[in-house]
Amino acid sequence: MTFRAAVITFPGSNCDRDMAMALEQVSGAPAIRVWHGDAELPERLDLIALPGGFSYGDYLRSGAMASTSPIMRAVIAAASRGVPVLGVCNGFQVLTEARLLPGALLRNAGQRFICRTVALTVENTDSLFTSAYVRGEQIRIPVAHHDGNYFADAETLDRLEGEGRVAFRYAEPCNGSARDIAGVLSANGRVLGMMPHPERAIEPAAVSALGGSDGRRLFESVFAALASA
Image (cartoon, rainbow, N blue to C red; front, top):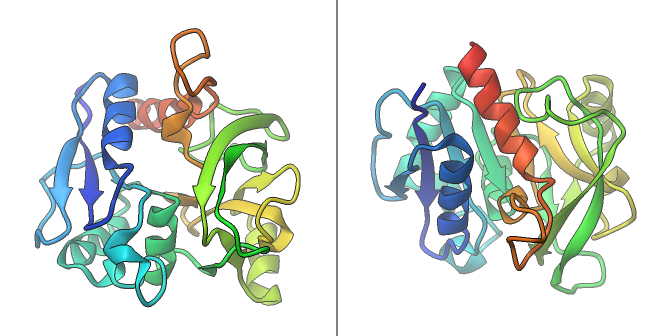
């Protein structure tokens, strides 16, 4: 099976190439690069990825301007049809601004940019993004963000917890995120937003300067689920 994954690039994206390379390395098929000003997505997509970076210079709010880009109308429509969408870091911010995921990403507690590898606890293994993990296991994934402090009101947080929509949680406090939430799923489980960068953790230390392959299983989960659908 040949997979068709698209990576959206906004002005200020800086992880789009990393994401495209990760998708190709795991799936074996080159990712399709899509510019934010395009009005339509390629046909027959299996996955859409919104990468990290500083779209539009993070003016107004991180992800706010990108969420109104022409391509986002097509992304929202595709998500409504059930096409899986992954938003990482700035991509997570865009997904909340576009209302594809609840909550918001605020300035980190301490007002500092955080760039390091952190431990995450896997909270959900029932989604197409997380089935290759074991519930409760700890994995290590890099983070690099200034506005990664996940916020939602208590009612929304309770709903996310009750519906099993918290995908990943920081094993230790990282950026002030409510309930240490690092990644959340949509109600149908086909949209995932997360601040840590799985595309930077797809190779073991022996072959990668970054070191660590715990992010690879996220992509393997997606493509295995698509192959068996």
